[in-house]
Image (cartoon, one colour):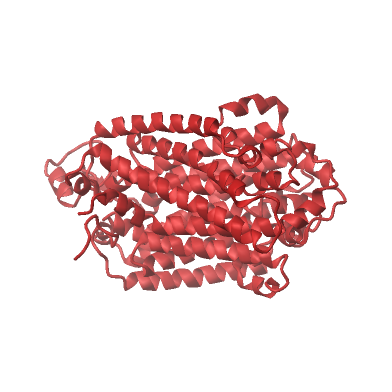
Length: 568
């Protein structure tokens, strides 16, 4: 046993997630350094007063400080916070659901120390990811002149750390107070989305500006750090709030009753009465995941269970899509007026696909909504897809599922059908957002074209869902499967984006699924059955491969994750 066993175990458990997010931030930072000259030249002559709030204290979005605040630090903190939320909600509920909490608590270590070591490891992982983004800045400066030194860039990057630690404490508290990891993660991410939207709307609408001060996102303004350097007062205030919430989480965990196998919803439906006194004994013998009362099967029990398990994450994602659609539609008239007749850099022209005019509704919504919101759905697909097999195995419930009178192929098919339905529901919430605001804002687009563009995102997402299922069936751990899928998403997205501006990479864009999805083109011409059908065909083929791999997979009881003790 090492001196800090839980710290080491947590670091190792999250190594693939940290590597994936860190790699994404590195590429994102280097990418923005590379495109800055073209961005500055294109927008330097425009009146962009409406964007001063977005750039924070940097003010001018064409300055290096304002550009990074708007284009990089608008999104990078979200990736880091999502990393923290996933790790923190697994600190208590993840171990409890996986059946390893009692093993941890049986070690000669106090509860508070266990949580503290886990939190320290998650915080270190967040710092590594943040520094990876800073390394991307430094790497980009080797090939492109950029008027910010490495020290000031480091100070800007570190502005994200206090915010990440605050949401680490929020997630720990949610995981201690709420009964399921899904609900805790949804609550934390929902709070993050509300925080981000409040700060963003306040930066664009003067009437909401005064409310931005209650947003931690506002106080972690990277523009302030990039202009004036690291601010110990702002950082200290956020860290003090994080410390209070962390203390509350520790106190709540000390009082928490541990439920073996977790408190997640069971596969079988409970009945309100107990006609047979022997039923609890029989159910108890089947393990902690099943209910302790007589149960009856639904027509599609795994489909129903999977829908129930993912309901909070799908609802949270649907809310995000709905809110983002309303926000993007609300600011469209101002953007349309500002950018009318302006030629954008080649990188943005490549993003728009066939809709080459950014001031048109097809070009604007193609870039501002349909170009990047599929990433949110892809992350959701990666999380649930890898959890379909490797997640159940790690939780120790896969052998119980396979013991039911159901073939393996049907079990996986029902799980996937529930994911397909959930992802489609979340995507359609974006379309409902456009419909909700259309009476107020003239979108100059048919609702059916918006629906076609929304549905055209799904083949891309389902393709990566099939990749996630195949990775989960092939690799021995969920962490490795997740890192592989997220790595493919990041690599494909950047290859397609950079290929739009770099002639050397342009021929390789056709190898990425992102190239075949063109939201702006669908808004112009309607649903593209050829492209979408091809992606769906590949998705079905990969799903068939995942079924074959799952049929041949040897199940390890309790999963194949790294254990607390070091092997000899």
